[in-house]
Length: 272
Image (cartoon, rainbow, N blue to C red; front, top):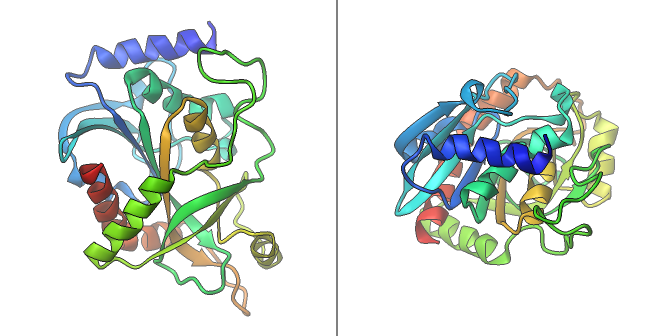
């Protein structure tokens, strides 16, 4: 079965389970599940029930699609994403984004927990992503291109929507939420970076680093979606004394900052 046919099969199954067509998609990162509580829920579908869907294997990722409303917007939320380091292909990692597009989603919100490579950042900061650097060893658009899904050579001069970024900054000020802006670097993982790598990444233009987001954003743009992305800075690798980083500590920091992130994303969606 072709990728296009898989997408249509999965979308048809999901459409049979929901009442309303979503127009806004949300992908939650590690420890950022609090946004689920801000949705007026209508339907939940475990990934295990969805044809062609992988299963999330990472602690802090629930593994279900949640449908409902934020304000007057119909949303689909991925509670749990798929990562290249888990052993999935890039096609599998980004498959849910393709399905969102087939369901009618035109705007995608992506969140992640990331390490700070900018020495002026603090743990718990929120960073609105203005651009990214793709250092993954594989590309989600490699291979034969299906014109029904997007163009062969995708322009990435504006991967993140300028109007949504401006709205995010404005609403953050209104809500009293301190936000940074910066460049996200995407790496394969699953190891956290060495101190030298953190410094090298910052010297080369990155303010935060993580193991997700970039492939999803590329495929969202391939499908013509507008994208807004935000990182929670959960660790800093640019201190003078090397700090041991654990996934549990990353989750703890993400959970602590999650309410601010959830409030900001919900406010943007409600105002769009």
